[in-house]
Length: 269
Image (spheres, one colour):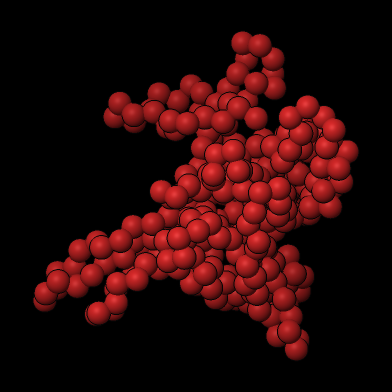
């Protein structure tokens, strides 16, 4: 499993998420460099004439998951391909809502989990389950919103349920195997200087309080303009040893492509 947290940063007027980079398997830790936060690009097209189309709307949201990596990333790959291929119906101009994107992810996620479980013969089908949060600034509602996608079994039938999360200052929403440990650590550190979600998350990863949570910190930020994954400045090795990690990958020495480097806003926890 893993740990991921979504929370509203009132100071910046932004919706943030953080996750660790550890991916575990039956044999233990698979990698400490696993991406778990992804952008959800939304591109809408309108029909002009004959076979001609043009882009009429662009938005972006965030996706973060906890649970089975294969089913979660497969869901994102398929769903995000769909969100970049929306065709606007004639006479319709309202932006795509964040809730509708969450429902799309849930439907695709449900199919992925069912198919993988079926092909495994039903043996240990629970290993393909995952929980995720779709979040960002909804252009349809003109406000920050977030929806959690979680496995459920109403009347014995598997479903990916979609539930809206309350977004307000002072509240945070954790998911994953480290959820209970994170909440407990938040309580322990509440009197520490600069106590908060970021400080607690950093300590959670550093101390490896939960065996399934570790590696490095990865961060995504949703603003009114859209969503982006941001680099993290890691200074844990001491003075003069800082490295830049992008979704857990040490990109410090990467030379860039065609005159461009990766990332333009680094976060130092």
